[in-house]
Image (cartoon, rainbow, N blue to C red; front, top):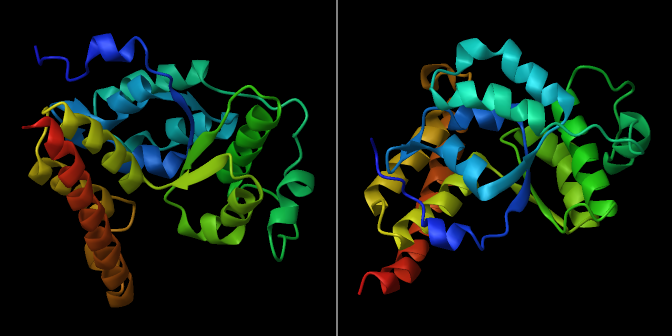
Length: 232
């Protein structure tokens, strides 16, 4: 059996950050490993995960896109991590103002992102959480309303799946449980993930992904410079 990569004594005093996680990020992080554990395993350990009901349903509908053993835990795990807002219940009234041009109707499109946004806002404003990271790889949703929400409510911070890997990678590098090259490979894998195959992407899309990946590797190099202090 693989050795548990977490420092259990430290974890006893660890305050988990609330994390509102989107379906596309769960799918993109599926089956990506560091130190013989799935990234989604570390998400359960490091974060207080909260989602809207739509995320749980979407994950059940897209079982063909996930394959790891860890994802079987997540289907059960999310049933206990689903939050139903009691005050911020209407997408048009709550989410609409964050759009520069709100959609004419709020239906199935971006329903998970809208629901998660209301979850994050209600948990924040009721002092249920102090702050939250909102993880999504949906760039269109980020540009259309999530960035505006984040600017209005700094207690909500936007992350991508690559940010999750950098976060987990930093912890594991400090604990000497993984290597720079392994974290770099995990970043490469998450950028390559997604429903759209690399061969089906346009050249501009490929160039954009390569630039983002290079930027993340640059951040990883800075992380290594800091975590190396625990190696001496």
